[in-house]
Amino acid sequence: MKRISTPIDKEIIKTLKKGDIVLLSGTMYTARDAAHKKMLDILRNTGEVPLKGQTLYYAGPCPPKPQECVGSIGPTSSYRMDDYTPIFLENGILSTIGKGQRAQKVHDAIKKYGGVHFDAIGGAGAYYKSCVTSCETVFFPELGAEAVYKLEIKDFPCIVSIV
Amino acid sequence: MKIVLSQDITSAIKKMCMEICVCLDQKALAKLKHAREIEDSQATAFALDIMIKNADIAKKTSSPLCQDTGMVVVFVDMGQDVRIKGGYIEDAINQGVKEAYQEGYFRKSVLDPISRENTWDNTPAVIHYNIIKGSEFCLSVMAKGFGSENMSRLFMLTPSEGIEGIKKAVIETIKDANAKPCPPVVVGVGVGGTMEKAALLSKKALFRGLDSKNEDPILNDLEEQLLEEINLLGIGAQGLGGKTTALKVFIEKYPTHIAGLPVAVTVQCHAVRHNSITL
Ligand code: SF4
Image (tube, rainbow over all chains, first blue to last red; front, side, top):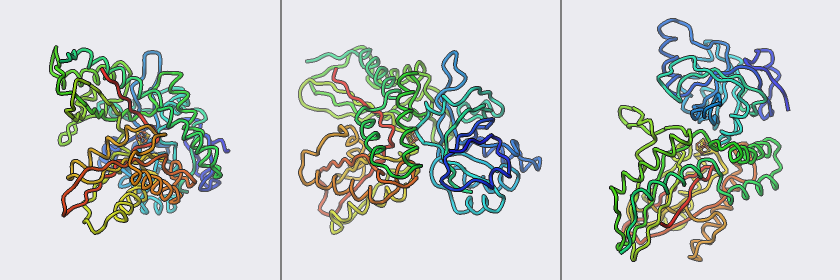
């Protein structure tokens, strides 16, 4: 089992192989379909994608209970982001986390730009919640669960799926 | 005649929603533990360990097992001698859903399909009514996540395709779904009737206990054969490869037309969340 800091350094990505079990610690940002669409609009309008260099986690949490920073927060299906991922990779978002298989064009773009994609364990929302130490809304609060949340995580388990 | 109060319907729905979203079906948990014991692949065993620990953390911290707390599906089996008092049954059910999803801090995932505007209380539920004999009143509730629901399928086969065609349809559904529905999955199959009847049977089939046998020996055989064949696909937990792709296959049938063979497959993820109560 490897321990890795997020956002993930390009040099570290080179040391990873498919099937590696890793524990991630550091910062990551949630983004689902609706946030991807808005991020793409921003990229088209400004020439720069928000969250360049960061790690994206495809997830939309449950609301937190009082005294909690976040509710259950497992991964959502990656394939719904397949149309956006190649252009985000091209613009510097190199690491992503989700569940389930991805389109060939995503595999190709990950190889081309030196990125990495991890599979988190689908359905393990309560477990992943216990790995989050802080959570704040940074973009698109109007999207509710689909907003972009900045997460601080500790020992977040996942498996290298495409590298 | 039996009287059922609408407020009792609301509290039963609320209580069941709050329990199922937090507490994994115990038979599913036992099957996941068994899958973990027999698994050789390191990554897959790791994924199964996390699923098992997840169920424990969810229960201890009263947190939803999965952040997709689903769309609520309710089957109402209502005796024809039952009378509901105190309000419209549909409002009573939706009120229970609303209260559970607010008080449980569950995710609200239900929206208008065209405008995509969220209703922000996870209502309405999808409700199926079935009038039965006598004066029983039974509510069955399921929280259905859409990672798996999106992989569900309907096949309008020709009669000549027969049992082989049914098997092919089920295997194809699970093979194409691969890791998307959070395997190990539970598979509900509805055979016969019309298009919508087959779909309903496939959903209702999922309420059977995970350790139960089909009372129809032919269907029971078919369930066992299909389970074996699905597990030979090697998709494994989370699609990481391995021995257990499905925990159970359930098949229900209904007479159909001489010209048809409808087959519906509802895919259910490992987050098995359903319960029933008789009021
Ligand atoms: S398919 Fe089931 S376990 Fe997977 S994310 Fe959806 S609800 Fe959760």
